[in-house]
Length: 553
Image (cartoon, rainbow, N blue to C red; front, side, top):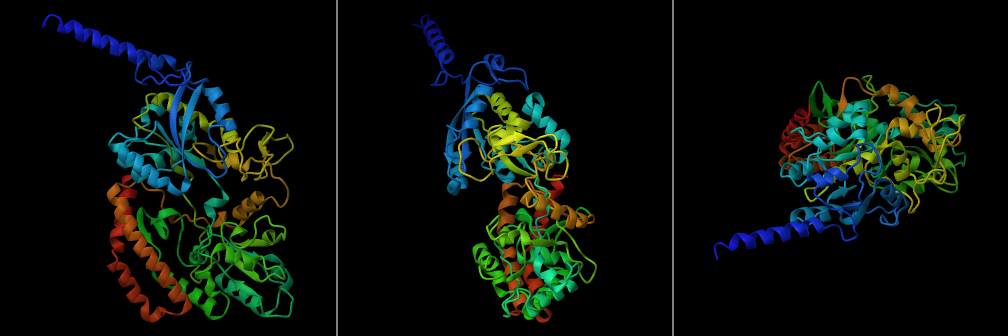
């Protein structure tokens, strides 16, 4: 019995080896371990196609996209599979249950090889990266990252932004540098009214007040009624909150991401809303309201309600409003054409000479591509994602097929920035289709890429936004203070700061409305307001942000 046992064990081990060697994907594709010699032999040279000699399958969880009919049958999916020799088994997660689904699969261990387009936040990357669920990509980037290393060389700020404090890179981003988006806290004013009244675009807070008063009292729409609304705002549109533009004539007030109102000066983080300059900004807003120039609805109305005012069918009623584009208060590209009759007002110079155009430091969507420890072929998964940064692949994955949805530019065509163009949209983006991924997953849409698109005509929205930003906001980007970049936080930091920030920001918004509308008195109630912020542990919130910021320097 003892002599026979080693022989039986050998047979069992041999059978196990044979079964393992014969196993593969159900569709005949390989799922061999990335660490094995056979998997390495299956890879082609980095930067070449196909990626693998024998077709390999990856299991990918992807965010559902309302503009994509079916990722499995999508034209770009099929084209990229043919080019890479990598087949994708898709698991599509509805946008509405995105975070819930991700939390469930990570907690339960039933997650795929790759997580795509779920925009996993840095705090979650650190949690699951430190325990090995998300694999660090550093070695893969060094060995196979042909396009990723080019990206890092051209834009070192990208590498810095996605590197955790421990030096690990757990995800690849989607790059979407949008020039006009980077300075989206804009004011728009109705140019025909200025022309009719013989007024210039205002340049100071005093001039702005005078223009609004002229809109209110001089009947610029010419209907003989005092029905003009000088200034009305919605807090719910992109770049539009009431303090997003006007407060920057008093103190730097960026409104980007989770760190709104927070700024960096000389390496130290601080907030705008407890400073004497903020108080003076509130005093100015209160004067606009008290004199009938700013509507009370500016604190409560939604985007659609403001658009109804902006698109009033009988006559123009709205003199000015805020937003990243005129879509905040008009029907963008609508038949009335009213959206194109508003022009931007440069940052207004305040009483103390302050005038800032806040700049958004984020040029990427973090957590777009993650490889998990379930991946048997992490090298294949990484190379598949690395290739998506290529110029043609970015065009195909975001816009569609060459000469159908996009084309190469003609020699005499100019881009949005007035330089020679490189490519042109044939079909407008935004329709439900099944030929591209509609901005899902890694891609490299740099400023250079976006601005090299052919300018369609004089009223091309992208051209308008580029010129308004270049001429009226670029000159006022701050040099002495800056916005806070996206921060990597530990789970504890992220949880504590989220709770504190919600409580504090809700209170700031509430008191801003009360001070502006006169429900609270600036002179009598300001000190109580500041003390309440201190009691809400504002100091601790700033401390957490400072710790995270300093760890990334």
